[in-house]
Amino acid sequence: MKKITYLLLITIAMFVFNGCTDKVDATKDLNLVSFEVRTPTIIVEKDGSTDTDIHVYTTQTTSSDRTFGVEVVEALTTVSADAYSVPTTITVPANTNDGTLTVTVSDNNLGVDPVTLGLRVTAAADLFVGNEASLNIQKHCTLDINDFVGAYSGTAGSGDPTEVVTSLDGSGNLQITGIAVGWMENYWGEVITSMATLPMDVDLETGDFTIALAPYMETTWDGSPQPGYSLSATGNLNACSGTMYLYYDLVQAGQGFVGYYVYQSSFTEVITIN
Image 1: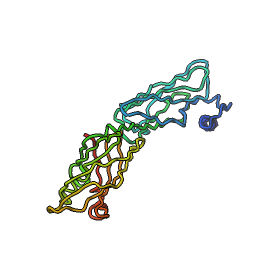
Image 2: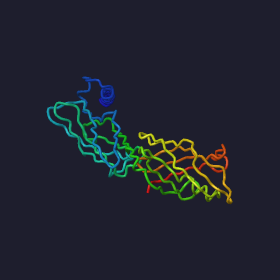
Image 3: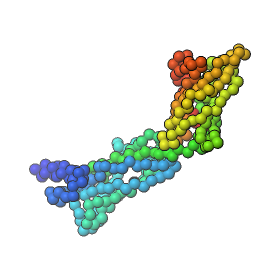
């Protein structure tokens, strides 16, 4: 019967923690400690670190400080061990039921995708342990256009080395040239006689960009001038990895090439600034 009573009290205590109720008298006899349920997402700037406070709550208050052990839950953790620092104990001050644990996360081996860090209070005699904490960690990279200016390396979708080069126009906006050079010269077999530099409309918050359809390239084939090519594109500048994703279409005499003459992957480039 005592065990059933304690299980019921644990349920009540969880309702207290989760529902923000100030007090339930029945929980005074239950020695329980639990992490807060609604833990914040930890945002880490590229090459930086951040401190985040996580709370634990107890069902009892005492006239002296209480210290509890804290450990990492491997089954809930996907973040690299060298990216975080967690104290091994947490203290709930005297005459309160709220303790604060400061977790430090740094951009060491953090990738683009979110990762998690699991924490729990260490079990001890006569102590009921409630919620574990599952902390979401997200790397954030502020996009700086200057980081994406220059010649790029990598392989275009056609299998040829990329020849993409970006620069800034007179107003500081990004512009691009060198798209589809390998495909045009090697797969399509035409000689490029002129090539324009086209403006890129970049969303500085997301890194997404568009290139509006515009005249782009003049060529010859077997010595004969060919109808000019226009180009349009969409893509993304990934500020965390320094990578450009570029998906484009060539248009000649009103005919788009994507999906008609070649596989669409031939008009995709995932490339990195040198």
